[in-house]
View: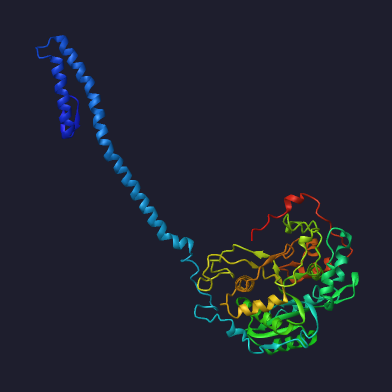
Length: 467
């Protein structure tokens, strides 16, 4: 580096050489080869002052390229670091590698999840079975999953919506007669198709319905409980008890046991099967009306269950026409596995490796045609067990059996605070015994006439599901 005297500029060797040449030429031009006068000295000084900015500019241009390269290098290095961090953490973020590692206490990684080990398909495993079960034609079998000690809940169901002698199809007109013209009646061809399951016609039409309760074994088998259960089974002839430990995490086994019994005993004598819980209220007349091809009228308290398409209850496309491949309820889709180990829905990674669940139906209540019962049972025997029953039966097994899940707006997985919602829906869930009794008193009071939708109708409709 060299310094230009008088100006404080440092330049490299090449820049210095150029500066020296230009500076010399300027001096020669100013002197003209003679001794200069004072005026010539002034001109020479002006030329020097003008030359310095030009030299500075040329020096900057020569130093600009290396600085650009340095910046480009920094940017490239930063991009490489970002890409490296992205690929390191991508499996953790996207593939859910780290969460869901904790084991379930009763379904450990080493516990067999082969369904055949528990349902024993070649054996008669029922400890208690109703007499003459499915020996006669039955249009609809309703299997209620219940706990061993839930005696009061079972009795409440028998005395309310489970009293299908009184709460049968003939109650449909009593509930909705004031809404005539606002719903579609049953299809004549379906009445003819299912004539063997029906008695009477018109307002006195009665459909054969059978309710059974699916029970397992308690953790402690005291004689008093067993005696009480056997007396209950003898009196009501509606108990199916299977040989497995009856816990929440064994609900899948309970439901597969129900499929086993219905498939073996009812495949040739029944048309439809409904599975529900013992805290579910089922409006049996509405369900029968839907299965026979009719639609349920819209009410102000149920209008929010519908989307723009399903709310058109007078359109024939909203009738049920299928007789096979029916698997219907409240559809869930794009549900992610729960990672909170304190949740009763926590899903360990070793039990389900996917990042999201397949489409499935709420276990509160779903209805199947009898052919689907058999197909789901066969699929379950060859599908590794997942302890969440609704996900396993209506999601994973249904996918393996290539059965489509259909959504119906009147299958609710919670219960409404509005009393008329019980008259206008098919399924309401999560009811305590006192709520079940209150709902029944309201629904069975046929003098109460629930109003149709009255305000903000379009705004209250749900967005149509993309499931």
